Image 1 (spheres, rainbow, N blue to C red):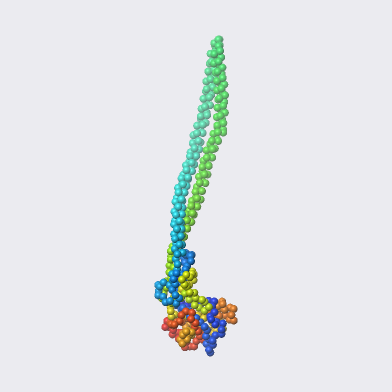
Image 2 (spheres, helix red, strand yellow):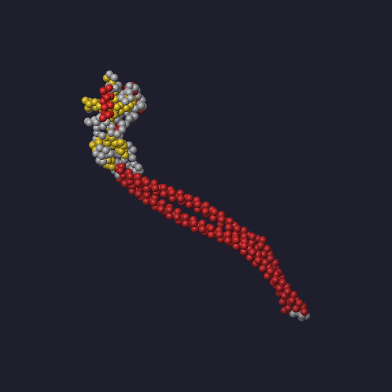
Length: 418
């Protein structure tokens, strides 16, 4: 809720036409008279400008229009049930936002530790693959080749031994003229065993050639591919983890921003608590509505219990009880004859015996509502420096233009006294 100070004159350019504005002005010699209306000259206004509250605003109690109030007096009370519900809901939402943010932080920490472990495993697997390839290249391949050579040598030596043994048997049995069946069997088995050994040696040689030409190079290639695959997997893992970390950071920032906004909204709602009690910003007469609502052609509201309070507009005015200005509209034909710093004489319809004098100001542009009339009209204002009792906002007045020198001198003295 805001209070605006209205101590300075308001040079209005509002679409109003004073009562009788279409009638020709009363003319007496070089003077013209126009109807005007008294409006507050010194005042402060009260408005509703919620920061976050978006519910209904209903009056529970309102001071009567025209009451005299002291500074700090309660002017009106508004129903706060809807506001309390919104505060309650905002507190729950803030709590939920806090939980979501805390969970997101913990999940990010867990994900970070899991990512570090996965990266460590990948690096370990790569190191193992590289060591396996290095062991194969430096040692296992040579061991395989040496083993194959050794097996070939064993096979050759075995065949040579069998050949020698067969020769000895044949020599021994040939020296003996009597050859029996047992000797033939021994010789046959020795020759058969030699033939098998030779075929086995040939097979072993073929297998060794296969291993050297195909199997061993293929195994080395698989080890190299395993190393390359582990390197690529590690590279992709790092890239995915970086993307996931950025996504987690973005999610954390969003949740943190949502948490801050929710906390700010709750605080704004709490700050709006002052909306529901109107207090007088100064002493004076309480007017329902804005000062402009008491100008010609306007209708001032009357607030009452159960009524609705509008936001972002003046609801109440607390005005000095004896400080007034007079607003009127002047036809274009009369504006041309008004000199700068002119003075005007004012008489209140209810106090016709008293005459007031004040400076006259006229807007430069015509009132929009006067375009359809016979001539344009201009908003004008007479600022009265003298206190005026017995008048209230909205009362009628008569403004006399073309004041004589005595009136101008009175205006000057009034300004000096102020």
